[in-house]
Image (cartoon, rainbow, N blue to C red; front, top):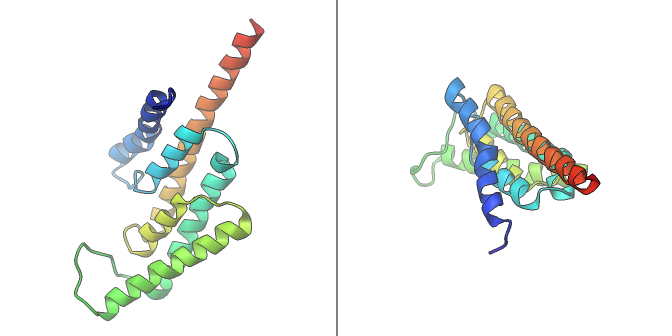
Length: 168
């Protein structure tokens, strides 16, 4: 086990605690499945291109936009459920919405150099009708921005402390 593992483990929880608390206080979906992998990347990679705010936020923005386009074009009013009847048109529309959204998200992230794999989960959350409104999309982006700002605050504080220790 890497010696940073205990810190990284707790750091994932700390990063998710703020949007989780905001979700609890507001009753809104500010804690959603794809936020976990984003927090994990920030906690374990910490700095560099993979965790740049442009990639993390940009990837999720593209995922939200692609999900909204796919959902509202192909499957408005539908929502994926744990079990659905076989071979229904509604189920086919949801499947098509998810496939289109993932395709658009992948292409959009590659074209804009904002590749962030968790955004492919975000696009499915939106396109499958779990968080399909524009307000939901805005809240997803808001939660990602909160996560990235929190991470920037922590890494800037750590960097400052490291530089100060070297100067002393």
